Length: 139
Figure 1: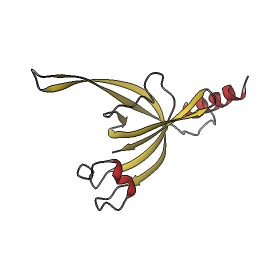
Figure 2: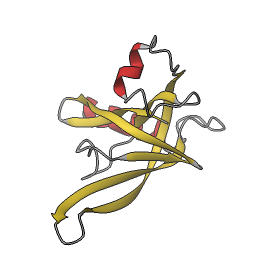
Figure 3: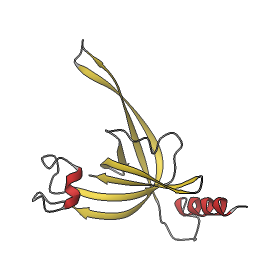
Figure 4: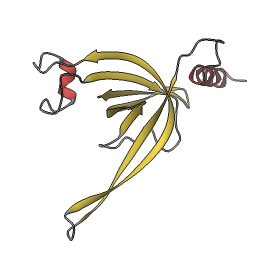
């Protein structure tokens, strides 16, 4: 077995919580992939298709955003739409074929009853293998 294959298997064990018995590292969530369709002049609207894909997530970082504009991370969103209770989060996500990293402008992460807007997605690779995706989200 090659080094890359061993690393991929190790990462997969972390995400399915089987690396160390009794320690839960990842949580279940849903990645909402929103695909924008065509504009219909008759209705004045743009069609959208929503696909919900179950994902395993590891929360990395969480920061509250203030309305004062002091927080540099606030530049990720329109300050008018960011409420006092908004959070800026970073997640690691196990690769999902055909879904990530082709992030759309309206993509979301859903964890329990909380919805986060996906701000960016970056792939972390080891050689030819995608190990994890780093997702920055606001909610």
